[in-house]
Length: 169
Image (tube, rainbow, N blue to C red; front, side, top):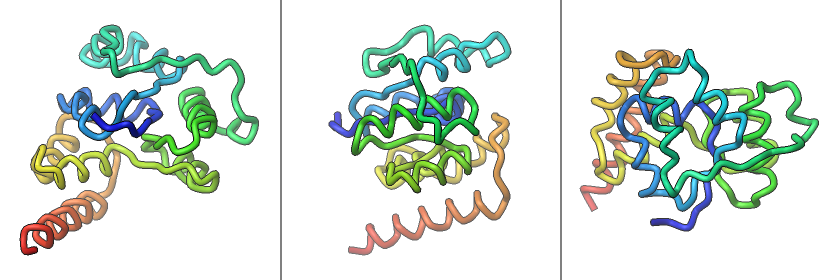
């Protein structure tokens, strides 16, 4: 297991759980910090049952953190993003897993390394843990993940190019 610390917002946990790929986080990261607001969002009654079951099981690598105050510069975001950004900012070097474009931009402006569901799936494919096209098709057909056809295709093409380059060396 890696020693890289990650802070996750709601989206990546939600989608990786629905895809049955949540445990792959342990191949890339040490502890996964999840702010209490994210836990509340993931355990909401309207959240799909597999996600609620996962968050209630709280594997040893999933660490729920209380975020008693949030950084005011993140006030424009929802509770999950606000707390995830604040926790990531308070842990220098931590990677933020987040799919929200505005929250990702805020992280980048604060020099917080950021990835999301698609980036994580790309990295897992590059590590030979899954087939990127199959997982993207599942993401599109089995979840409500939003993205353009162009985005999905570009992730697939980039991943396949990197795999070809690696295999040709």
